[in-house]
Image: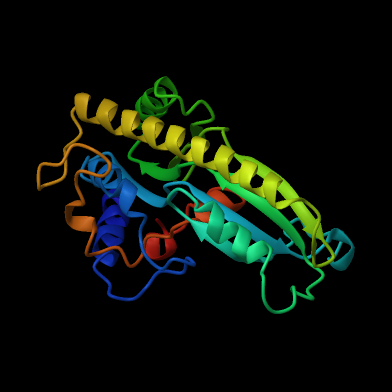
Length: 250
């Protein structure tokens, strides 16, 4: 009964009109049908997710942070859950007017793929979800907890992280940045295909489609589209899986 209570509370909280704690404040619309399919199954509900993102992170240099702290913190200078526009990235890093940033932070260009954390009713349900995810290319998927709550992380390893500079200076050329954006966009397209394949595999296994009949990641929005205030876009993809209550979940 505890699983059912947690799921009911989580699903009820989705109706909140408050923005979630993520930078975006709402769910990634690309994966709404997938999240709907998982959440409509009686043995599962999602607790955090990200459809995949391309970003530039500004973070304190190691010398400026406590050596005993694992997380360095930082802030996003650029972030998108769609294909990145090379012109926008270049304009940000190489402005034609004004002075460059005087911050001493390191700049890191990132691509992070789809990830979702799912609470499962029991280990058997978790094993089935992991098996399906792995067969669809999410080979880093696995059961992350099986004690008080049975948690699964669905994820893969096509991430990308490249330093762009430090000490407030960009140390790479515009041509190289354009090259990185191209690679990240290719990874994003591969990420979308893999995520779409996961959704279709779940549907073939008996998971429900969105109520409006859409069967693709961009072909249906489902009932989460209007009720996405507690979907923690991105946090699952930052440093690990956040398996907390979905008040910062998707």
